[in-house]
Amino acid sequence: MEMIRVDKVYFEYPGARPEVILNNISFVGNRYEMISIIGPSGCGKSTLLRIMAGLIKPTSGEVFVTRRRMVKPTGEVSFVFQDFGLLPWLTNLDNVKLGFSMSNMDDEAKEKRARELLGNFGLEGFEDAYPNVLSGGMKQRVGIARALAPNPKVLLMDEPFSALDELTASALRSDVLRILKSKKMPTDSVVMVSHSVEETVELSDKIIILSEKPARVKEIKSIRLKRPRNRHSKEFVKLVDEVYETLTG
Image 1 (tube, helix red, strand yellow):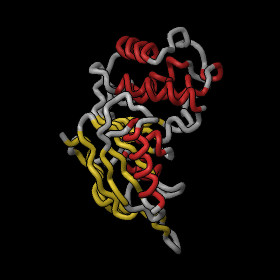
Image 2 (image 1 turned 180 degrees about the horizontal axis):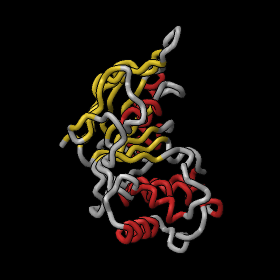
Image 3 (image 1 turned 90 degrees about the vertical axis):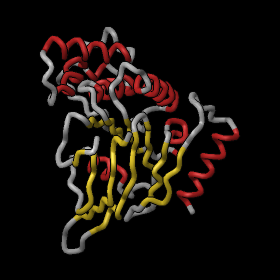
């Protein structure tokens, strides 16, 4: 079942000398797929993700989520920011509750759901604390919990692990996969921007490889390795080499 479709998305910054960022990007994300977008630094990966979220309008082209055209942010799509995006004057519980801004749930249900999500990410006991007492990994767990609060159909993540040390990032990647693959979660598709080839091969069912700016799709690579994936296996290393070759070739 098709969950998200990016159809000939073209984007340029206007001005006396318009700068083309995205050059007719197209791909499809199906139900239960985890998709990664990777490409050279500055090629427009984050811009593309924001267009998919309805935060930026493309110059031309369209994005569809559950076959409905995206013209503005909706409750069906949630966004995880690279820099956590937590409000320091709110408790961790209240930060998660911000995810219900487009929800019709009553206050009691919101409270229960927010506490449940924090518990899923191992943050019991930190509900009434503020973000400044958390480590980077814990802050990102709160950010992901907030994004999952409204039960989105599609979760968009902008380099969610890049601000973390590798040990913390590895643990959080495992947590994210465990929770998103759980039948308790209604999220049907995940699209993640990443700058790490190894990370994309570890997590993804499909990798969208972009060229330098103005970005076009160089290749769409399917990853069919069973999970959990061994980064030292011959199959894994071969796929990493193939993605690197496409990126640099």
